[in-house]
Length: 440
Image (cartoon, rainbow, N blue to C red; front, side):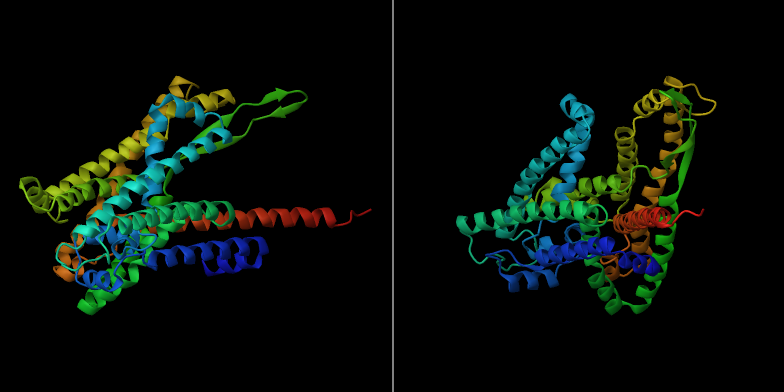
């Protein structure tokens, strides 16, 4: 990794992209630290120091600590992520979006525009909820301090507009990183949010138990290595393209492979599951935490080590994995595309037989992929039982979502840097050949 960065910094164009990405990350973190107007910073800091566990840790992770601080970028990247997932799901069911997807670059630009509109709408909803919770003191139920300097409607409106503008700015920063930086901009910002809370988690664990910190770091190294191994695992389906004569030239006749990953769904099922189990806790807090429904939620879904919570997490993770794979990879469409370009899987007839074969292979791969995500989500719960320290449990940083985000985004970014380095190496090699005088 250090040698790769040194090679990348030697290339002027690539060095500019890396520095631009780092600059956008600095701006993103600055917006997460900068408080919104009308927020009592001292009161927020006091309440935040005494709050931990449950919904607080979940919000801390998904916002990089910005939402609990009521900063300008308090909403984080989640409105855009949720909007993108919703649009992706609607693309499968809405004919208009299906037609746009098939129109190529112009249709994709229109889908991106719809995603931006939905992001703003979700940001307005999220900002209104966060400000309402801050006014009533339900963000920190155990802290009785007033988080806003003024409870008036004008101050509330200013804070909501500020948070929505912050979410729109984050969306713009992510698109800038995608266009002018390295890697996918939204993934880089999600990675930044997750990594931002790591130092505070590790410092808290060190204060409570240095031995637990050492054990956790060693387990984290093993876990990251295992996740890298599974994330890189894939089934390579061979594809043969027949030779075709177009004009006076012969085309095709090549052999490639179709890579089907074991974890074809990526991190989306874990985000779905975490969000679904986070919503009941949020509803319970918005309703004041009283009543039979709120009592049932606090008893069974608020504690991560409760058998009901564990069973719900596992079932939702497996279900979302199969569902997400089914909508993101269409064997019929892939088989039709291969048939259109005279491609076939050796030993399998083109068309319907190829689609059935790809569906069979994908279903066999999705089963271990879903089990892998389910086991990965159980790691924090197992750590809770083994450590038996409440302070260490609530600050356990190596959750399934955390590790998947760090490893997935890290691997993808490294692959993009390597690809751009190889592309420039080939260009330089061809340039040298053109400049070398021919021997007579």
